[in-house]
Length: 121
Image 1 (cartoon, rainbow, N blue to C red):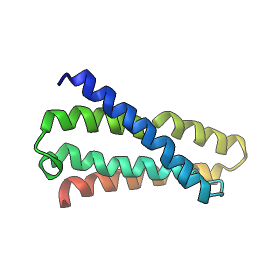
Image 2: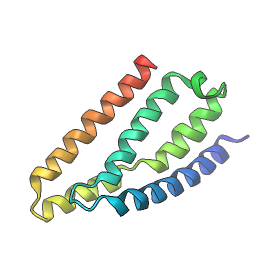
Image 3: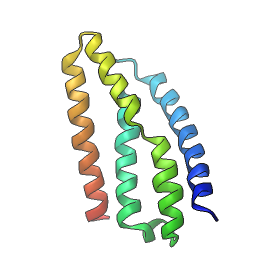
């Protein structure tokens, strides 16, 4: 199967999963902290840590997994642009403390989960 096809299929599934996950999370989370993007991005960091360092845990399809899940699905599932937009919105809405907390927690927890996935699973 072509790598571009795998990235495309993974991207389609990742984008749909992101949209549906956001809808579900936002249905229950009504506070100013952008919880949907936060959860999606840290979950994506954890899964990418698994895929990159332990591809045999999921399937024995290293290249297919790398392109389809790592680049396609997780590339579309997680998003830096939405993260940046939400930080900007928090600052413009005069919530700089929430914006700062969001940035710090996103980076730290995302990094810790990616590291944990690569070292402990």
